[in-house]
Image (tube, rainbow, N blue to C red; front, side, top):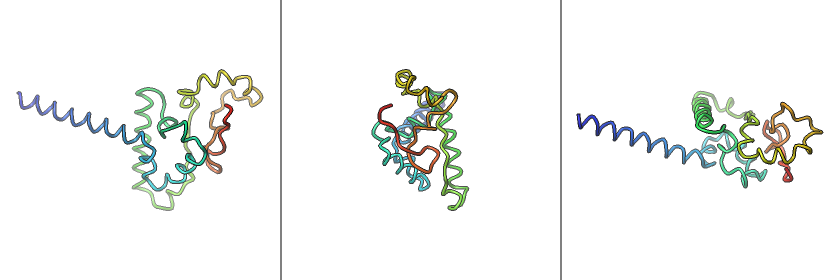
Length: 149
């Protein structure tokens, strides 16, 4: 019985270590850029200046809380499968990164309330932030980030 208990403790200790190590790795942009098909989005993120205030891909590509992290993990796993299952030609993009408004509001809720009057002319109700606030021309998440918002 003691051997079984020790086995469970060792197994769950190793599992916790792997999960924790994985979370640390994936929060570094070089993790996402380790797949060649992510070079262009990564370079656009750097050149747009977004990398100065949005330090991790997961800052903008995951929802809030544990549920958001789990959903992002599942999307990432799907992308990993695509990476190995699709041909070079199929992996060239363009890639469309959906960034729902809720992801932005994790950090920018205060800015939205401060700029509500400035946003009125754009009739933003029901629209995603990424429609105007983008990181690279020619991509779904493209363009210049206005520094005054």
